[in-house]
Amino acid sequence: MTDRDFELTRRKALAGLATVGAAGAGAGLGTSALFNDTESFLNNSVQAGTLDLVVDYYTSTDQGSFGTSSQSGEVNGDGATVYDYTVSDVKPGDSGTLAFCPKIVTNRGWLWVGSAGVTDYENGQTEPEGGVDATPGGSMNGTNDGADAGDLSCAMDVTVSYAESASLDGDQVECSNTRELNNPADYTLADLSKDLETGFPLDGDEPGNDDGTVTPYPGSSGADDQQGPCLCIEWEVPTDVGNEIQSDAIEFGFQFVAEQARNNPDPANPFVDAIVTSGSIQDAIDAASAGDVIMVESGSYGGPIDVDTAGLLLFSRDPTATTITDQVVVSADGATLCGFTVSPPDAPTNGASEAIRVSDTPDGVTIVGNVVENFDRASSASGFWGTDGINVFGGSASDTIENVTVRNNTIRNVYNSDDYGSTGISIQGNVDGATVKGNTIEEIGVDTSGTPVNSYAYGVVIRGTGNHGVDPKNINVVDNDISSVLASDSTPYLGVGFGVEADGTNYLVRDNTIDDVNIGAEVKEAATELTFVDNSLSNIDTSVSGLELYFGEKDGDAVSPVASIIADNTFDQAVVSGGGDYSYDQTIQPAP
Image (tube, rainbow, N blue to C red; front, side):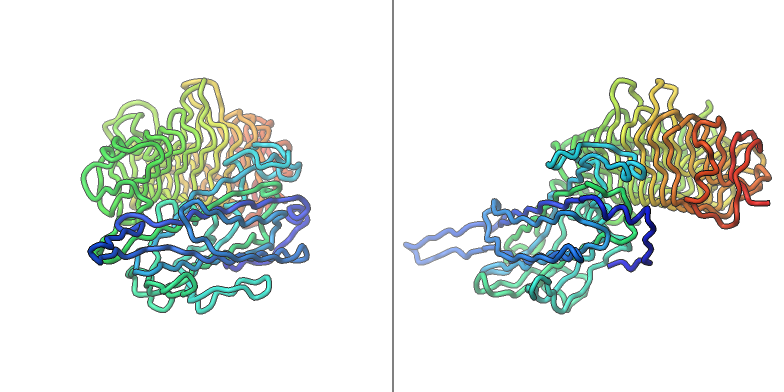
């Protein structure tokens, strides 16, 4: 698991006083494709072979003084057998293991593991949770409620490994002779579930042969004969997780699919409905049905692209090698864009001024694991408008965008050499419920040579729109790394790490790192429910204003008083609250 410094303040300790439920994991197991049954031709003394998939499972939990538990069993399936892994009252520091040991009887077979997804339930909010979580949903009525609004799956770190075997030793799962897969830092259950939606081929030579190739699982002589490797998933809720998970719950599931290996050297991924190897991504989207999965192979692809099929997952396994050279719009409920570099040409019009746009009314959209880079405004363009890396744009006053997630993306070198503005991530207009988490946002307003060229810039901004009068609400901006957001020193405007230009409610800005900006945070409107806590601000660039401004607030209503946030954030030097400088009613500046 990821090592973390142990730090437990009273505010964080409160997370252990409320009930958190993690409930339900279902596994459907079966076979598919060339052999999925037994056929006999007895009169001619010719009998077909067989392919039968059996999976043993072992699970355990360790909840400290609350106790330990374990279970084991076998799924020998027709796709309908379900096992349950239920953990209640989860707290920071709790952990557990799930181990799966597949056996393919009697012939060798290709084997995939996939996910049915994870559902995060909010289950209402306690008073401490509401102070650090801006996204409401559900109620504490004893059943899981408020689907897709919870935070627990993003708070559970996981480590995935191959193992030679697995067994129970008391209430402890023992995975022997393990080799970890390439688990990224801070890899969560949400990340794993999203990755497995597209299927992962299991290598029958593991754990001892890490040669980068996938081989079939060896055949077993029977349901008790373990020949291929097991898969072990360890989870932990780190001790630095806070009140945001109080009362939350999750449901998740895994599925294994086997396909014969003989005479089948290049099997199709059973979790993917279409593969794009060249040509048009849009053609594949237009031919897809709701809920389909489209995998795009490495290469460069044109556009523009509109992901307009409900529930569609459009993904690439390697964003460094798979580029879309035009704007991508996600406009359908439940759609996901995952794993691309998006680098459009210089934007010629306002309509093409966002590299990735969620618009105008879709709910439940996920933008995850993408790279947006080197995006400028065309010098020939007219009008006053800027460029955005990712914009969640609620453009309709009558139909709200709800529950959008922008997670683990990288946005860099988004600028405007024609002297207007740029933003890394924008939440704009009629948006109710958005989570901006774990993104790296750098060199906004800064061109590819490293020169600040913009008249103004934002790392992350919450703002209204001229299309209507509805402002965003219930927005979480958490765990982002924001740096080098700078304006040109030839203008009187600023590069701002985080900004609010909307009168909306319930904005949470927590655990972000803001570094090398002209001003750390700027609040222009009466965002009276703004919580700005546990952020780190450093290296204020004074080239534009001449002032070291960590926080500037313009109308006296957004944070009252602004001095109250100093103790909850960290700065690279001693600071004090003040007012009246550089048109701000309230500021946080270096101490004299």
